[in-house]
Length: 99
Image (cartoon, rainbow, N blue to C red; front, side, top):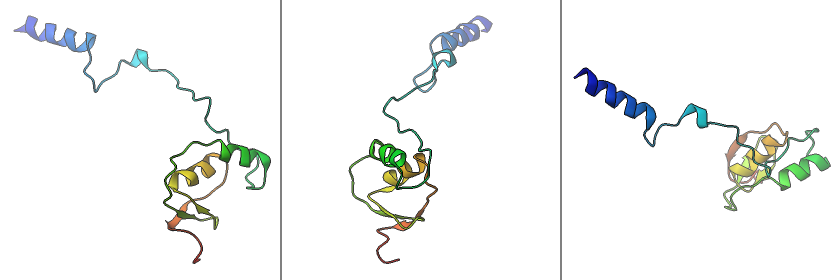
């Protein structure tokens, strides 16, 4: 019985299941296309515009209103603004037009 448990234990260590990963295989993933945070948090800055324009998202139109009063095409675009240096949160779904 002890040998069976030992063999099963070794098999689990040597061949992890699909849900597990070997910690030695983990590395740093770098996406060269990731936007770089803007130095200035002004939406008028060239660095912000470049960062926001190069931020990849889905093309779905599902507008959200940001705490900065800007209507974003979808929540992912709002997250791009955050990644690019704007402090903004979702206020509500839909455009900001009625606010």
